[in-house]
Length: 396
Image 1 (tube, rainbow, N blue to C red):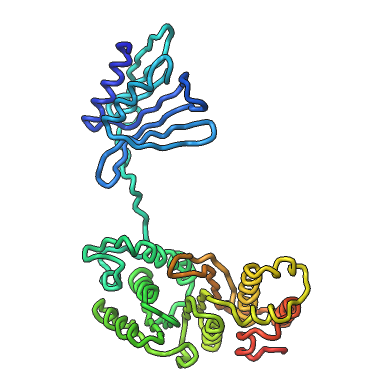
Image 2: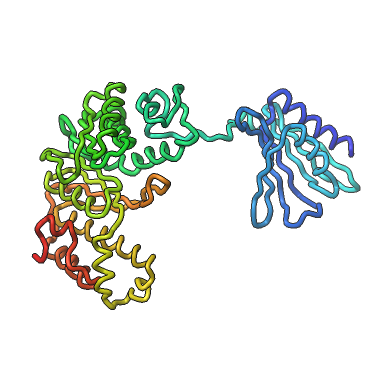
């Protein structure tokens, strides 16, 4: 090892010790490893332990490896040299140092003014900004999403992400809601209330809209549990009621939400929202048996028959047809519709979100929409769609 290489390595070691190290770049590779071009090294913090992260840059890929400071220093000694990397650049907050191959195994060493005078963040565990932060929210603890310190539990990470992902999707829509003294929200089939609590919190405490939220759920034990959590969280205008979508009576709903209501229960929820002239209808359909049974029964010959003869494709086609007609019916009643990819995990086996936002002074072409619905039914051998029947536009 030449003297200048040794000085370069010692300068690197010292910068790590006195916390002035910014980064290290190695290039002009003349070694035996095929397609290796450069290495970039930086400090990172993984679970409160400091490491040096090496990114190996090849012609077609990058590989990242993390080392302790001792491991990294030993590795650098073997990497720099006439038959390795012939150029090395050290960046510190005090100075920059270039090590460059000349000839005959010799290297020059050039010290320069520091080009970076402040240390970059060493955090490897990136903190994502969440719409609903975990800390300081009592209901997340009672719902077993977080511990008493507001840390998300390991087995609840997916559910916490799902909550925030849902709010990210509908946040722009919620901001478009008309200004009202009180926004009345109903969650049909609230289950354990994860999204119901989060939606109440978001509307009232993030958007600062005065919102009254009701969760409707068939299971009495869940209703009682959620009402206790709402009381303990001091959510005065959040309550849960025992009942089904069809039996729930309320003619004053501004936002209707029904996530994973099975088969025609989604149609019942959409119809409830249409009947109340709701500003926003949000559904995540689950199961599509009503339409699929008709498609399987009639087996209409058309351009997609070569696909729908396979059961899995028939299922997917039935889903698209069912939800496509739902969107058309919403448009018939003056809603602009959007279909989003929701999220799919153990709790949400279906991942389509149908959204209807009521348009002001709607001028939808109802005749054209009815024609599209009729043509779609004929093409796929469908007698009727349950939502179409509920709305009374069947065969109109």
